[in-house]
Image 1: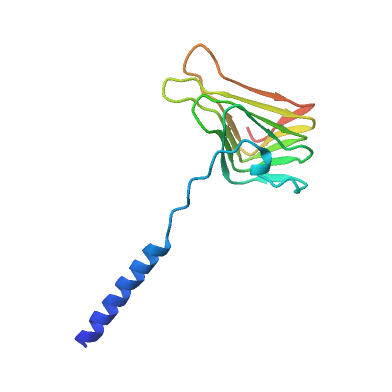
Image 2 (image 1 turned 135 degrees about the vertical axis):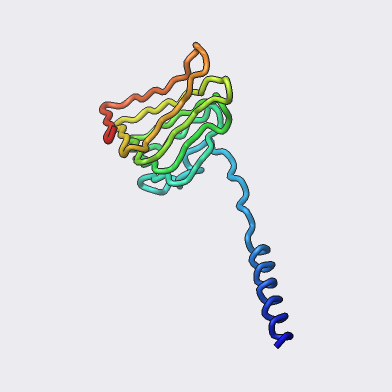
Length: 150
């Protein structure tokens, strides 16, 4: 009996050790600067469901592909800026951020679409913060815009 208990305990310990060796944290994803780093160019449309850090000054040009954002696009560093170009952009529970660090203004997010720019759901968010009198900005250029679920 005693030997069985030792084997059983050892088995659990071995399982725990093997499980801990198999779990490896994923490597940090590099910041993106091109739309094709998020969605392959061959896709007819682009749905962004993950979190992507965007390098400062980069333009994510999706060409003719309509974009739906249900994940997060955020500036890689505090107080930096990026641009999104697409035929249409729907932020469906997604988030775009260019916030600043402690005591810093946020950056700028510029969005230019030739069609509809929509924000759906109560958690859709475009965020830049203001820490001083010099304000960061968000801009959207679109023939029509809509916001639902205020």
